[in-house]
Image 1: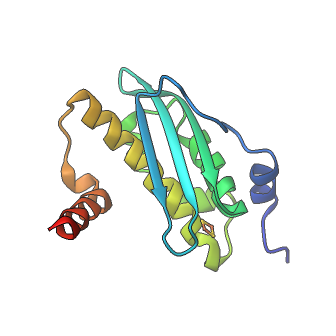
Image 2: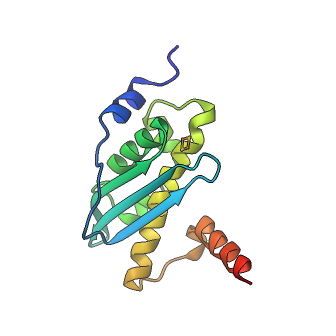
Length: 147
Ligand code: FES
């Protein structure tokens, strides 16, 4: 059996929504400390709907395929729905990823959440902080390090 599904290969060789939005309403950037890969997601939001999304991923093929698929899955969707997107759903939509590559799809989930949080923060929109556990933990760690 091939290591990667046809969908993974398709989204890796022909990624959708690659690029940058100069007038983005929210930007999320996350990285994986172990492999050093970085993913950046830009969203455009109107009336609570993600009207456009682009990504830049400096990473492995699985991370590129995951970003491509994840952006397709949230385009045109309400923010609330995009926040519910899990890395598992992204991996499933790609017809699976090898076990040692599942962490690559986690970057997509985290980058989308970070972009939405950035949109909320920029616009002074109240949100449930428990929806962004990773980000708040990172902020806490950053604060601890500065002490
Ligand atoms: Fe780093 Fe895939 S190996 S995100």
